[in-house]
Length: 195
Ligand SMILES: Nc1nc2c(ncn2[C@@H]2O[C@H](COP(=O)(O)OP(=O)(O)O[C@H]3O[C@H](CO)[C@@H](O)[C@H](O)[C@@H]3O)[C@@H](O)[C@H]2O)c(=O)[nH]1
Ligand SMILES: [Mg+2]
Image (cartoon, rainbow, N blue to C red; front, side, top):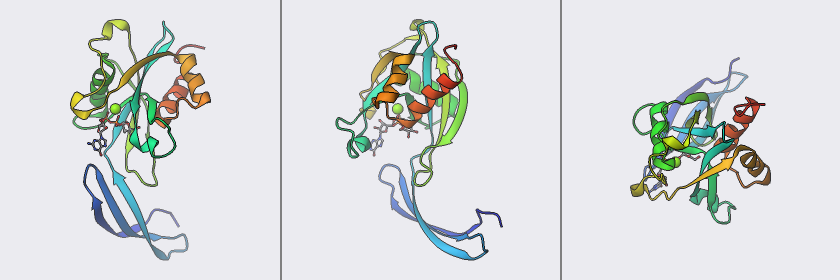
């Protein structure tokens, strides 16, 4: 018996205030062939893209720092998060979006990025799939201050850190964002900065 047979999917909209929260009722076929009814809430905030900006010569990465209310609600004392540059896919594909986000959030205009993997970040409750990239930056690509979209009140601070310092911040817990940890570890495992 294969898993994954489902039928009678019914969606009830609980909220579409900003993004969309649905209560989904469905029947799921168990291994013994019988059907059971399950209820799951699913939050759809679209898909996203994230990128590790790195400079091999300088041995540095560019990250961002911003206030994240949901983390404040769950134990992050000042609500501030150090994260790789990222954004939700609005128009266009993941690659176009991430280049746009890089310029908006960090002020660097880059034109070469490499997709490294994709991942569901919270598959039990959030529909989002996140596309992961890495890309080289250098000082000459800096065209503005960055900081994020003014109309979105993002107030993003741009950080340039040594790669080893960023890895240390994962150990100490100063970096606690999953996508950022995944990208830093990708760079480490794949010797993006050399052995
Ligand atoms: N008014 C309002 N604004 C919101 C709400 N929820 C989010 N926003 C704003 O919508 C904007 C979205 O900015 P993006 O840069 O496109 O997305 P992001 O929040 O950085 O999302 C990235 O990181 C997430 C967390 O790791 C990822 O989940 C996501 O895929 C993406 O990579 C942010 O300014 C955020 O504050 C809301 O309920 N109300
Ligand atoms: Mg963002």
